[in-house]
Length: 95
Image (spheres, rainbow, N blue to C red):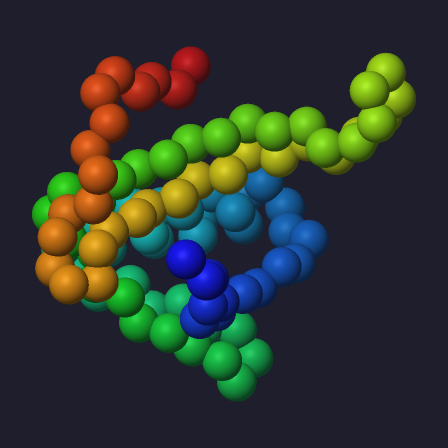
């Protein structure tokens, strides 16, 4: 299935700035409000359902045995037709 990017933003920020942004997203999710992403002249508003699929990935990209790029990816997914997405089993925790 082809992917259409509706919004993308990438910038270097402090851990404190990123934490504040994530807290804002968490507050919107908890209250059931729509989430508007904006940067420059671009914006998109999305309304996650009550139970979207939550995907967490830790990745390392680069050659084996040499320094690479590390990332933590957090993703919410749901069906556009109003479904809550595919649920996966397992408890997620952050330590």
